[in-house]
Image 1 (cartoon, rainbow, N blue to C red):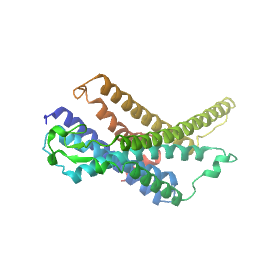
Image 2: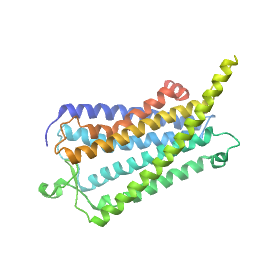
Image 3: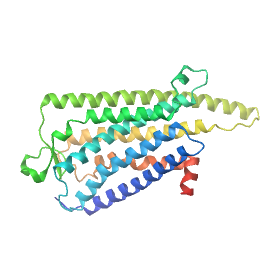
Image 4: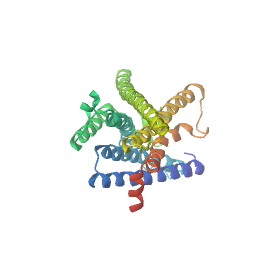
Length: 298
């Protein structure tokens, strides 16, 4: 293993800042949900922050320790837990972000719209959806514990792919394609739903903008409802998610097929993996006035 203090310092800063921001968002939204102005969407945002924390702990911390060359601190069980948590957290991030977009689109839809029938009015509906996401992503990643080991337990020449601490035992082609298909199908379904809900929100926000221009021309005062301001924040959050997701996919594929050794090329794929988890809490803090006030109070 090679000592890389620059990479370690960057990962340490990103992971530390991201974890602190997500903890602040998580605690704030839980506090807001327990207050008089509780909203089901607060639970979704708190769950998104919790998912980001899991992603940063399972992805950022091992990379930091690896870069500083602190030695192999993971045994077989620890490798299984870390890699499994990283895969589940990634899936939960996709599902929760998509769910957040759909719920916000339903929230700002007109009262006479048929989409209002799908509105989740109780926290039990939100918690049931979150439980479904956990079960779904746990099942999709259930093959990982059988094919992950620490490099302490085998000859290092057996390593085929993976990090410096953990590696993947070669698995059968059938098993690999089954779980890969399930992951691709999950990503396609939830990102398709995210795209449709985002497009619907853009249409509603455009109509609202035209209405505001009409009122301004008529010299009438109009204040933007908080639901529409929240929709704008969710759209910004989704654009951030899509940017990091697809940038990570394309750059990782490009480096895999066209560049043999990309470990020194700014570690771009590794940083992109953490980008959304680091930036998203600060987007929420900047855009949500109630969250900002709650953060100042705490």
